[in-house]
Length: 121
Image 1 (spheres, rainbow, N blue to C red):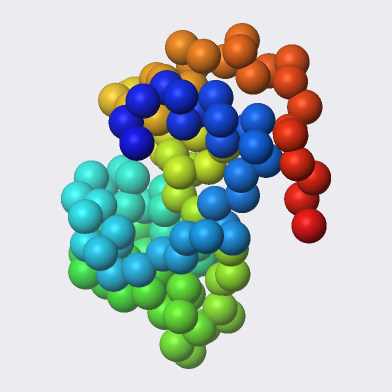
Image 2: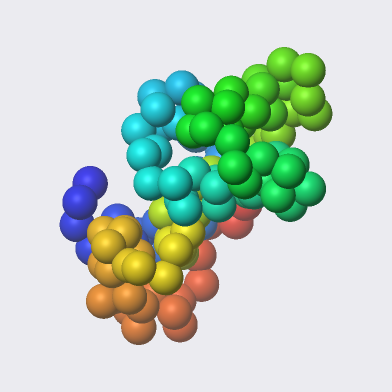
């Protein structure tokens, strides 16, 4: 964790984070940036819900995301992974500052031409 080696090995091994990770309250509670919170809401709940709740408090946005991830009164979202945890990772804003994205850019040439070592099941 925290090294560029993960950004090389993840794609090379065909790692699918959605198979081994699920969103939970801890992650949602850690998101403090309003722009990121809105983008994650869009990822989880869709454009219509995100647009309708642009002015909502962070608490309301997090509750909607929890409901989507658990299926509590909303369609349950399966297999969602934050962009920064995917292979290749991506940011939710143009500001940068996402370590996984920075490391992936540094090693992009190492894995770009390689096929995954294992096939997805």
